[in-house]
Amino acid sequence: MANEELEMDRDNLDSEAMVSLRDLHVSYGDREILHGISFDVKRGETMVILGGSGSGKSTLLRTLVGLEQASSGEVWIRGKNIAAISQDEMDEIRKHIGMSFQGSALFGSMTVGDNVALPLREHTKLEDSTIEIMLRLKLEQVGLAGFEYYMPSQLSGGMMKRAAVARAMAMDPEILFFDEPSAGLDPIIAAGIDQLILELKKAFRMTIVVVTHELASAFLIADRMVLIDKGNVVAIGTAEEMRKSTQPRVRQFLDRVAEPEVARELDYLQMLTEDRRPANMPGGKGRA
Image (cartoon, rainbow, N blue to C red):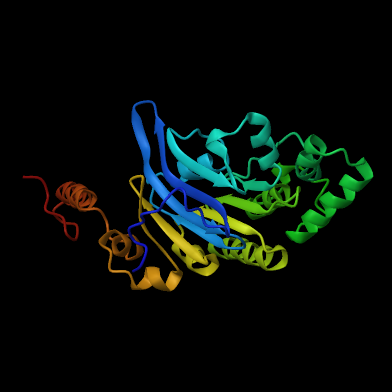
């Protein structure tokens, strides 16, 4: 598959890109998490960042929205390198991006409507009457019309996710980021969130970046995917290119093949379990 090994010139930014990474390194103390990440997200594209637990995908997302600092390299958002701008400039960029967190991150002491209205009250000088209209529009767009006076604790998991999306959209962002949008949801509710992402892209032509490990979701919503493994880009391409890839780590991830050491650990645990069954139970060997 083309682009499985990326070599990009940081001076040759894609003019169509809303997000560009160039040799991005991120460390926590002495431990480096991301080891030179480079790729572009084009205007109007839905890019899905895939990876297993501990792969670095959540750290990558946090760096993209300015919650983590790069150790080195460049992160370009809307044509500005956020690794080299002032806090005031970063705050201005944040007005053009929306973030839907994995756990929704709604304020439990505020109504759903107040949660959605918060960015508008913090970053604009709009009249309360105008904000009231806008928050109701945002809730309607995510299928929560009439829920503005509910508390987050009164919502189901899927409804909380939708409310979080409404808040992320409050400022009409050009770029929308999702962190594990379907995590913890049953398949039917998760499918509804996937459909919502597709509808938002179609209606507003947003640039969307989604971090997930859910393959069914990824293949439904993605224009392109990037697979992160142990802090490195393993592959990048369309859903069809990913399906056809022969790259070993891509195949392992897509085919859900356990790591050899994990498989050995499971075999060992199974052996211990079997050895402890009474001899008269099926498969039981009894104790020596």
